[in-house]
Image (cartoon, rainbow, N blue to C red):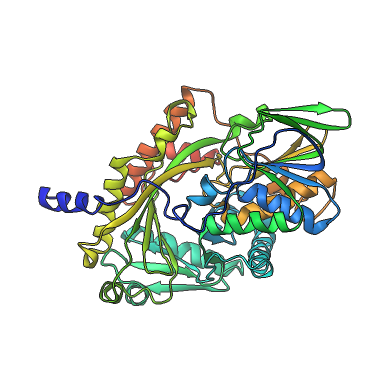
Length: 472
Protein backbone atom coordinates (compact mmCIF):
# COMPACT_ATOMS: atom_id res chain seq x y z
CA UNK A 1 0.00 0.00 0.00
CA UNK A 2 1.07 3.56 -0.56
CA UNK A 3 2.26 5.41 2.57
CA UNK A 4 -0.75 7.74 2.59
CA UNK A 5 -3.17 4.80 2.37
CA UNK A 6 -1.35 2.93 5.15
CA UNK A 7 -1.46 6.06 7.29
CA UNK A 8 -5.22 6.19 6.73
CA UNK A 9 -5.51 2.54 7.76
CA UNK A 10 -3.55 3.22 10.93
CA UNK A 11 -5.81 6.19 11.73
CA UNK A 12 -8.81 3.86 11.64
CA UNK A 13 -7.38 2.20 14.78
CA UNK A 14 -6.72 5.40 16.71
CA UNK A 15 -9.75 5.08 18.99
CA UNK A 16 -9.93 1.28 19.26
CA UNK A 17 -10.26 0.10 22.84
CA UNK A 18 -8.00 -2.88 23.66
CA UNK A 19 -10.81 -5.07 24.97
CA UNK A 20 -13.32 -7.52 23.54
CA UNK A 21 -16.36 -5.64 22.31
CA UNK A 22 -18.58 -8.34 23.78
CA UNK A 23 -17.04 -8.09 27.25
CA UNK A 24 -17.20 -4.26 27.20
CA UNK A 25 -20.84 -4.42 28.23
CA UNK A 26 -22.50 -2.59 31.15
CA UNK A 27 -24.80 -5.59 31.53
CA UNK A 28 -21.94 -7.85 32.60
CA UNK A 29 -23.05 -9.73 35.73
CA UNK A 30 -21.23 -9.53 39.04
CA UNK A 31 -18.84 -12.32 39.86
CA UNK A 32 -19.90 -15.08 42.21
CA UNK A 33 -17.87 -15.37 45.43
CA UNK A 34 -14.73 -17.49 45.51
CA UNK A 35 -14.70 -20.85 47.27
CA UNK A 36 -13.27 -20.38 50.77
CA UNK A 37 -14.05 -23.72 52.41
CA UNK A 38 -14.39 -27.41 51.63
CA UNK A 39 -17.32 -28.53 49.49
CA UNK A 40 -18.76 -31.91 48.52
CA UNK A 41 -20.92 -32.65 45.48
CA UNK A 42 -22.00 -35.29 43.02
CA UNK A 43 -20.43 -33.51 40.02
CA UNK A 44 -17.70 -30.90 39.93
CA UNK A 45 -17.32 -28.95 36.68
CA UNK A 46 -14.01 -27.14 36.20
CA UNK A 47 -14.18 -24.19 33.81
CA UNK A 48 -16.75 -21.43 33.36
CA UNK A 49 -16.70 -21.12 29.60
CA UNK A 50 -19.24 -22.71 27.27
CA UNK A 51 -17.90 -26.22 27.84
CA UNK A 52 -18.29 -26.10 31.60
CA UNK A 53 -21.52 -24.09 31.64
CA UNK A 54 -23.30 -26.42 29.23
CA UNK A 55 -22.08 -29.42 31.22
CA UNK A 56 -23.41 -28.07 34.50
CA UNK A 57 -26.71 -27.01 32.94
CA UNK A 58 -27.38 -30.29 31.14
CA UNK A 59 -26.36 -32.29 34.22
CA UNK A 60 -29.13 -30.55 36.18
CA UNK A 61 -31.60 -30.95 33.32
CA UNK A 62 -30.92 -34.69 33.19
CA UNK A 63 -31.16 -35.08 36.96
CA UNK A 64 -32.46 -32.09 38.96
CA UNK A 65 -31.44 -33.84 42.19
CA UNK A 66 -27.79 -34.05 41.15
CA UNK A 67 -25.63 -31.78 43.31
CA UNK A 68 -23.44 -29.77 40.92
CA UNK A 69 -20.60 -27.35 41.67
CA UNK A 70 -18.76 -25.29 39.02
CA UNK A 71 -15.46 -23.49 39.65
CA UNK A 72 -13.89 -20.91 37.35
CA UNK A 73 -10.40 -19.43 37.68
CA UNK A 74 -11.58 -15.90 36.79
CA UNK A 75 -15.14 -15.06 35.69
CA UNK A 76 -17.55 -16.98 33.49
CA UNK A 77 -17.03 -16.22 29.81
CA UNK A 78 -13.88 -14.11 30.25
CA UNK A 79 -11.68 -16.14 27.87
CA UNK A 80 -12.53 -17.63 24.46
CA UNK A 81 -16.25 -17.75 25.25
CA UNK A 82 -16.35 -13.95 25.52
CA UNK A 83 -13.93 -13.12 22.72
CA UNK A 84 -14.99 -15.15 19.69
CA UNK A 85 -16.87 -13.98 16.61
CA UNK A 86 -20.26 -15.27 17.72
CA UNK A 87 -20.59 -17.90 14.97
CA UNK A 88 -22.65 -20.78 16.39
CA UNK A 89 -22.32 -23.60 13.85
CA UNK A 90 -24.07 -26.94 13.63
CA UNK A 91 -20.88 -28.61 12.39
CA UNK A 92 -19.17 -30.83 14.96
CA UNK A 93 -16.23 -31.54 12.63
CA UNK A 94 -14.95 -28.03 11.89
CA UNK A 95 -16.73 -28.01 8.58
CA UNK A 96 -17.86 -30.57 6.03
CA UNK A 97 -14.48 -30.93 4.31
CA UNK A 98 -12.66 -31.80 7.55
CA UNK A 99 -15.38 -34.26 8.54
CA UNK A 100 -15.32 -35.89 5.12
CA UNK A 101 -11.54 -36.31 5.28
CA UNK A 102 -11.57 -37.88 8.75
CA UNK A 103 -14.85 -39.72 9.34
CA UNK A 104 -16.49 -40.31 5.94
CA UNK A 105 -18.36 -43.39 7.16
CA UNK A 106 -20.18 -41.59 9.95
CA UNK A 107 -20.37 -38.10 8.48
CA UNK A 108 -24.12 -38.33 7.87
CA UNK A 109 -24.65 -39.19 11.55
CA UNK A 110 -22.31 -36.39 12.66
CA UNK A 111 -24.19 -33.90 10.50
CA UNK A 112 -27.51 -35.10 11.95
CA UNK A 113 -26.23 -34.83 15.52
CA UNK A 114 -24.79 -31.39 14.79
CA UNK A 115 -28.08 -30.11 13.38
CA UNK A 116 -29.93 -31.49 16.40
CA UNK A 117 -27.38 -29.86 18.72
CA UNK A 118 -27.92 -26.44 17.14
CA UNK A 119 -31.68 -26.87 17.49
CA UNK A 120 -31.17 -27.69 21.18
CA UNK A 121 -29.05 -24.56 21.66
CA UNK A 122 -31.79 -22.43 20.11
CA UNK A 123 -34.39 -24.14 22.31
CA UNK A 124 -32.33 -23.62 25.48
CA UNK A 125 -31.84 -19.93 24.69
CA UNK A 126 -35.62 -19.57 24.38
CA UNK A 127 -36.37 -21.75 27.41
CA UNK A 128 -34.12 -19.79 29.75
CA UNK A 129 -34.82 -16.39 28.22
CA UNK A 130 -31.16 -15.77 27.33
CA UNK A 131 -30.81 -12.37 25.66
CA UNK A 132 -27.89 -13.02 23.29
CA UNK A 133 -29.15 -11.72 19.90
CA UNK A 134 -29.50 -15.24 18.45
CA UNK A 135 -30.14 -15.00 14.68
CA UNK A 136 -30.21 -18.13 12.52
CA UNK A 137 -28.90 -16.37 9.43
CA UNK A 138 -26.50 -19.00 8.11
CA UNK A 139 -22.97 -18.47 6.86
CA UNK A 140 -21.45 -17.93 3.43
CA UNK A 141 -18.06 -19.38 2.52
CA UNK A 142 -16.63 -16.87 0.08
CA UNK A 143 -14.12 -17.42 -2.73
CA UNK A 144 -11.81 -14.44 -3.25
CA UNK A 145 -9.34 -16.15 -5.63
CA UNK A 146 -10.11 -18.12 -8.84
CA UNK A 147 -8.82 -21.44 -7.47
CA UNK A 148 -11.08 -21.11 -4.44
CA UNK A 149 -14.14 -21.00 -6.72
CA UNK A 150 -13.33 -24.47 -8.03
CA UNK A 151 -12.57 -25.84 -4.58
CA UNK A 152 -15.84 -24.52 -3.14
CA UNK A 153 -17.86 -25.86 -6.07
CA UNK A 154 -16.25 -29.30 -5.71
CA UNK A 155 -17.19 -29.35 -2.03
CA UNK A 156 -20.77 -28.38 -2.87
CA UNK A 157 -21.02 -31.08 -5.52
CA UNK A 158 -19.61 -33.68 -3.12
CA UNK A 159 -22.16 -32.65 -0.50
CA UNK A 160 -24.92 -33.03 -3.10
CA UNK A 161 -23.74 -36.56 -3.95
CA UNK A 162 -23.80 -37.50 -0.28
CA UNK A 163 -27.23 -35.99 0.30
CA UNK A 164 -25.76 -33.40 2.68
CA UNK A 165 -26.44 -30.25 0.68
CA UNK A 166 -29.95 -29.52 1.97
CA UNK A 167 -30.11 -25.90 3.02
CA UNK A 168 -27.02 -24.98 0.96
CA UNK A 169 -27.09 -22.52 -1.94
CA UNK A 170 -24.42 -21.90 -4.54
CA UNK A 171 -23.98 -18.19 -5.27
CA UNK A 172 -22.35 -16.92 -8.43
CA UNK A 173 -20.49 -13.62 -8.25
CA UNK A 174 -23.47 -11.34 -8.91
CA UNK A 175 -25.77 -13.34 -6.58
CA UNK A 176 -23.18 -13.14 -3.83
CA UNK A 177 -22.60 -9.43 -4.28
CA UNK A 178 -26.37 -8.91 -4.12
CA UNK A 179 -26.18 -10.38 -0.60
CA UNK A 180 -23.10 -8.40 0.45
CA UNK A 181 -21.10 -6.27 -1.91
CA UNK A 182 -17.32 -6.55 -2.05
CA UNK A 183 -15.18 -6.23 -5.19
CA UNK A 184 -13.08 -9.14 -3.88
CA UNK A 185 -15.96 -11.66 -3.90
CA UNK A 186 -16.02 -14.18 -6.78
CA UNK A 187 -18.51 -16.84 -5.63
CA UNK A 188 -19.93 -18.28 -2.44
CA UNK A 189 -21.53 -21.28 -0.77
CA UNK A 190 -24.33 -20.30 1.62
CA UNK A 191 -25.27 -22.66 4.43
CA UNK A 192 -28.66 -21.08 5.02
CA UNK A 193 -29.67 -22.90 8.21
CA UNK A 194 -26.60 -24.48 9.83
CA UNK A 195 -25.09 -21.40 11.50
CA UNK A 196 -26.49 -18.78 13.85
CA UNK A 197 -25.04 -15.43 14.84
CA UNK A 198 -25.12 -14.41 18.49
CA UNK A 199 -23.52 -12.29 21.19
CA UNK A 200 -21.02 -14.74 22.71
CA UNK A 201 -20.48 -13.07 26.08
CA UNK A 202 -24.20 -12.72 26.70
CA UNK A 203 -24.65 -16.39 25.86
CA UNK A 204 -22.07 -17.30 28.51
CA UNK A 205 -23.65 -14.97 31.07
CA UNK A 206 -27.11 -16.31 30.27
CA UNK A 207 -25.94 -19.90 30.72
CA UNK A 208 -24.36 -18.91 34.04
CA UNK A 209 -27.66 -17.47 35.27
CA UNK A 210 -29.58 -20.51 34.06
CA UNK A 211 -27.18 -22.76 36.02
CA UNK A 212 -27.66 -20.67 39.15
CA UNK A 213 -31.44 -20.79 38.74
CA UNK A 214 -31.31 -24.60 38.60
CA UNK A 215 -29.27 -24.78 41.78
CA UNK A 216 -25.71 -25.11 40.49
CA UNK A 217 -23.26 -23.64 43.00
CA UNK A 218 -20.79 -21.47 41.07
CA UNK A 219 -17.53 -20.21 42.53
CA UNK A 220 -15.61 -17.70 40.44
CA UNK A 221 -12.02 -16.55 40.93
CA UNK A 222 -11.44 -20.13 42.07
CA UNK A 223 -8.78 -22.00 40.17
CA UNK A 224 -8.51 -25.78 40.28
CA UNK A 225 -4.90 -26.44 41.32
CA UNK A 226 -4.68 -30.22 41.54
CA UNK A 227 -6.78 -33.31 40.95
CA UNK A 228 -6.39 -36.53 42.90
CA UNK A 229 -8.35 -39.66 43.83
CA UNK A 230 -10.13 -39.50 47.17
CA UNK A 231 -11.90 -42.66 48.24
CA UNK A 232 -14.50 -43.54 45.62
CA UNK A 233 -14.38 -40.03 44.18
CA UNK A 234 -12.00 -37.18 43.45
CA UNK A 235 -10.60 -34.21 45.33
CA UNK A 236 -9.71 -30.89 43.71
CA UNK A 237 -7.61 -28.39 45.59
CA UNK A 238 -8.29 -24.67 45.11
CA UNK A 239 -6.48 -21.62 46.58
CA UNK A 240 -8.74 -21.41 49.63
CA UNK A 241 -10.39 -24.79 49.88
CA UNK A 242 -11.14 -28.17 48.34
CA UNK A 243 -13.98 -29.83 46.47
CA UNK A 244 -14.74 -33.51 46.99
CA UNK A 245 -16.79 -34.90 44.12
CA UNK A 246 -18.02 -38.27 42.92
CA UNK A 247 -17.33 -37.22 39.33
CA UNK A 248 -15.39 -34.38 37.64
CA UNK A 249 -15.87 -32.83 34.18
CA UNK A 250 -12.99 -30.79 32.79
CA UNK A 251 -13.99 -27.87 30.58
CA UNK A 252 -10.63 -26.09 30.76
CA UNK A 253 -9.87 -26.36 27.02
CA UNK A 254 -6.80 -24.21 26.25
CA UNK A 255 -5.62 -24.02 29.85
CA UNK A 256 -3.31 -26.79 31.08
CA UNK A 257 -5.41 -29.85 31.84
CA UNK A 258 -5.40 -31.27 35.35
CA UNK A 259 -5.01 -34.62 33.56
CA UNK A 260 -1.41 -34.07 32.53
CA UNK A 261 -1.25 -36.77 29.85
CA UNK A 262 -3.80 -34.77 27.82
CA UNK A 263 -1.64 -31.65 27.58
CA UNK A 264 0.39 -32.69 24.48
CA UNK A 265 -2.83 -32.93 22.45
CA UNK A 266 -3.56 -29.19 22.37
CA UNK A 267 -1.59 -26.03 21.67
CA UNK A 268 -2.67 -22.41 22.08
CA UNK A 269 -3.10 -20.30 18.96
CA UNK A 270 -3.84 -16.61 19.38
CA UNK A 271 -6.56 -15.15 17.19
CA UNK A 272 -7.42 -11.45 16.77
CA UNK A 273 -10.46 -9.38 15.81
CA UNK A 274 -11.59 -5.82 15.17
CA UNK A 275 -15.02 -4.25 15.63
CA UNK A 276 -16.09 -1.15 13.71
CA UNK A 277 -18.12 1.74 14.96
CA UNK A 278 -21.81 1.47 13.89
CA UNK A 279 -22.37 1.93 10.16
CA UNK A 280 -24.57 4.80 9.03
CA UNK A 281 -27.57 4.05 6.82
CA UNK A 282 -25.55 5.28 3.83
CA UNK A 283 -22.59 3.03 4.65
CA UNK A 284 -24.86 0.06 5.23
CA UNK A 285 -26.58 0.70 1.93
CA UNK A 286 -23.21 0.71 0.16
CA UNK A 287 -22.51 -2.90 1.15
CA UNK A 288 -26.02 -4.36 1.44
CA UNK A 289 -25.87 -7.29 3.89
CA UNK A 290 -29.63 -7.23 4.50
CA UNK A 291 -29.78 -10.93 5.44
CA UNK A 292 -27.04 -10.58 8.08
CA UNK A 293 -25.21 -13.83 7.34
CA UNK A 294 -21.87 -14.64 8.82
CA UNK A 295 -19.08 -14.83 6.25
CA UNK A 296 -15.66 -16.37 5.95
CA UNK A 297 -13.26 -16.38 3.03
CA UNK A 298 -11.76 -19.60 1.71
CA UNK A 299 -8.03 -18.96 2.00
CA UNK A 300 -5.82 -21.08 4.24
CA UNK A 301 -5.22 -17.91 6.24
CA UNK A 302 -8.83 -16.84 6.32
CA UNK A 303 -10.94 -14.00 7.66
CA UNK A 304 -14.31 -14.35 9.38
CA UNK A 305 -16.74 -11.43 9.54
CA UNK A 306 -20.28 -10.68 10.60
CA UNK A 307 -22.59 -7.76 11.34
CA UNK A 308 -24.10 -6.99 14.74
CA UNK A 309 -27.67 -5.88 15.49
CA UNK A 310 -26.43 -2.28 15.85
CA UNK A 311 -24.75 -2.45 12.41
CA UNK A 312 -21.13 -2.84 13.46
CA UNK A 313 -18.86 -5.20 11.51
CA UNK A 314 -16.64 -7.69 13.30
CA UNK A 315 -13.59 -8.58 11.21
CA UNK A 316 -11.20 -11.23 12.52
CA UNK A 317 -8.86 -14.09 11.73
CA UNK A 318 -5.96 -14.39 9.26
CA UNK A 319 -3.04 -14.36 11.68
CA UNK A 320 -2.92 -17.42 13.90
CA UNK A 321 -0.04 -16.83 16.29
CA UNK A 322 1.56 -19.71 18.16
CA UNK A 323 3.80 -18.45 20.97
CA UNK A 324 7.08 -20.26 21.45
CA UNK A 325 6.71 -23.21 23.84
CA UNK A 326 2.96 -22.68 23.81
CA UNK A 327 3.15 -20.00 26.46
CA UNK A 328 -0.15 -18.58 27.65
CA UNK A 329 0.26 -14.94 28.61
CA UNK A 330 -2.02 -11.90 28.60
CA UNK A 331 0.71 -9.99 26.74
CA UNK A 332 -0.33 -11.96 23.64
CA UNK A 333 -3.93 -10.76 23.90
CA UNK A 334 -3.01 -7.67 21.87
CA UNK A 335 -0.87 -7.48 18.73
CA UNK A 336 -0.85 -4.08 17.00
CA UNK A 337 0.89 -5.41 13.89
CA UNK A 338 -1.97 -7.88 13.42
CA UNK A 339 -4.59 -5.18 14.01
CA UNK A 340 -2.96 -3.07 11.30
CA UNK A 341 -2.91 -6.02 8.91
CA UNK A 342 -6.57 -6.83 9.62
CA UNK A 343 -7.59 -3.20 9.08
CA UNK A 344 -5.74 -3.13 5.77
CA UNK A 345 -7.53 -6.30 4.64
CA UNK A 346 -10.87 -4.87 5.78
CA UNK A 347 -10.57 -1.81 3.55
CA UNK A 348 -9.42 -3.98 0.64
CA UNK A 349 -12.61 -6.00 1.00
CA UNK A 350 -14.83 -2.96 1.57
CA UNK A 351 -13.27 0.12 -0.05
CA UNK A 352 -16.69 1.79 0.05
CA UNK A 353 -16.27 2.01 3.85
CA UNK A 354 -13.11 4.12 3.70
CA UNK A 355 -13.00 6.50 6.66
CA UNK A 356 -14.82 4.26 9.12
CA UNK A 357 -13.09 3.68 12.46
CA UNK A 358 -12.70 0.65 14.70
CA UNK A 359 -14.06 0.87 18.22
CA UNK A 360 -12.46 -2.28 19.67
CA UNK A 361 -9.45 -4.50 18.96
CA UNK A 362 -8.69 -7.67 20.89
CA UNK A 363 -7.28 -11.18 20.84
CA UNK A 364 -7.29 -14.41 22.77
CA UNK A 365 -6.15 -18.01 22.74
CA UNK A 366 -7.89 -20.87 20.96
CA UNK A 367 -7.28 -24.51 21.92
CA UNK A 368 -6.12 -26.24 18.75
CA UNK A 369 -5.61 -29.94 18.19
CA UNK A 370 -4.20 -31.70 15.16
CA UNK A 371 -7.58 -32.79 13.79
CA UNK A 372 -9.29 -29.38 14.32
CA UNK A 373 -12.30 -30.78 16.12
CA UNK A 374 -12.90 -31.84 19.69
CA UNK A 375 -11.62 -35.02 21.27
CA UNK A 376 -12.95 -36.71 24.38
CA UNK A 377 -11.97 -39.19 27.04
CA UNK A 378 -11.89 -40.25 30.67
CA UNK A 379 -9.29 -40.61 33.39
CA UNK A 380 -9.10 -41.96 36.95
CA UNK A 381 -11.14 -45.09 36.16
CA UNK A 382 -13.95 -43.15 34.55
CA UNK A 383 -14.43 -40.68 37.39
CA UNK A 384 -13.07 -37.77 35.31
CA UNK A 385 -14.12 -36.78 31.78
CA UNK A 386 -12.68 -34.18 29.44
CA UNK A 387 -13.38 -32.53 26.10
CA UNK A 388 -10.92 -30.22 24.36
CA UNK A 389 -9.51 -29.17 20.99
CA UNK A 390 -12.48 -27.32 19.50
CA UNK A 391 -10.12 -25.17 17.37
CA UNK A 392 -12.25 -22.06 17.20
CA UNK A 393 -15.58 -23.72 16.44
CA UNK A 394 -16.68 -24.32 20.01
CA UNK A 395 -19.64 -21.95 20.35
CA UNK A 396 -21.96 -24.70 19.19
CA UNK A 397 -19.88 -27.86 19.51
CA UNK A 398 -19.19 -27.40 23.23
CA UNK A 399 -22.80 -28.28 24.00
CA UNK A 400 -22.32 -31.59 22.19
CA UNK A 401 -19.07 -32.06 24.10
CA UNK A 402 -20.92 -31.52 27.36
CA UNK A 403 -23.37 -34.28 26.43
CA UNK A 404 -20.46 -36.60 25.62
CA UNK A 405 -18.70 -35.91 28.92
CA UNK A 406 -21.88 -36.60 30.90
CA UNK A 407 -22.49 -39.82 28.94
CA UNK A 408 -18.95 -40.96 29.69
CA UNK A 409 -19.23 -40.11 33.39
CA UNK A 410 -22.55 -41.98 33.61
CA UNK A 411 -20.99 -44.99 31.89
CA UNK A 412 -23.79 -44.79 29.34
CA UNK A 413 -23.58 -46.28 25.87
CA UNK A 414 -25.21 -43.75 23.56
CA UNK A 415 -25.17 -42.82 19.89
CA UNK A 416 -22.61 -40.18 20.86
CA UNK A 417 -20.21 -42.47 22.72
CA UNK A 418 -20.30 -45.02 19.88
CA UNK A 419 -18.94 -42.53 17.35
CA UNK A 420 -15.43 -43.12 16.02
CA UNK A 421 -14.93 -39.38 16.45
CA UNK A 422 -15.55 -39.81 20.19
CA UNK A 423 -13.61 -43.04 20.57
CA UNK A 424 -10.48 -41.83 18.74
CA UNK A 425 -7.89 -39.19 19.59
CA UNK A 426 -5.88 -36.79 17.45
CA UNK A 427 -2.14 -37.09 17.04
CA UNK A 428 -0.32 -35.31 19.89
CA UNK A 429 1.99 -32.41 19.13
CA UNK A 430 5.72 -33.11 19.45
CA UNK A 431 7.76 -31.58 22.29
CA UNK A 432 9.48 -28.24 21.83
CA UNK A 433 11.30 -26.99 19.89
CA UNK A 434 9.83 -29.35 17.29
CA UNK A 435 6.25 -28.14 17.80
CA UNK A 436 7.18 -24.50 17.28
CA UNK A 437 9.34 -25.36 14.24
CA UNK A 438 6.60 -27.47 12.66
CA UNK A 439 3.83 -24.96 13.25
CA UNK A 440 5.98 -22.08 11.96
CA UNK A 441 6.88 -24.05 8.82
CA UNK A 442 3.22 -24.93 8.32
CA UNK A 443 2.11 -21.30 8.59
CA UNK A 444 4.74 -20.24 6.05
CA UNK A 445 3.68 -23.03 3.70
CA UNK A 446 0.00 -22.12 3.98
CA UNK A 447 0.71 -18.47 3.17
CA UNK A 448 2.79 -19.60 0.20
CA UNK A 449 -0.06 -21.86 -1.01
CA UNK A 450 -2.48 -18.93 -0.83
CA UNK A 451 -0.10 -16.88 -2.96
CA UNK A 452 0.42 -19.70 -5.50
CA UNK A 453 -3.14 -20.49 -6.49
CA UNK A 454 -3.65 -23.05 -3.74
CA UNK A 455 -0.71 -25.27 -4.72
CA UNK A 456 0.52 -27.11 -1.61
CA UNK A 457 4.24 -27.73 -1.16
CA UNK A 458 5.85 -31.00 -0.11
CA UNK A 459 5.54 -30.21 3.61
CA UNK A 460 1.79 -29.66 3.36
CA UNK A 461 1.37 -32.80 1.24
CA UNK A 462 3.13 -34.84 3.92
CA UNK A 463 0.85 -33.36 6.58
CA UNK A 464 -2.17 -34.14 4.41
CA UNK A 465 -1.06 -37.76 4.11
CA UNK A 466 -0.68 -37.98 7.88
CA UNK A 467 -4.14 -36.52 8.41
CA UNK A 468 -2.73 -33.23 9.68
CA UNK A 469 -3.96 -30.92 6.92
CA UNK A 470 -3.59 -27.67 8.81
CA UNK A 471 -5.30 -24.40 8.01
CA UNK A 472 -5.19 -21.20 10.03
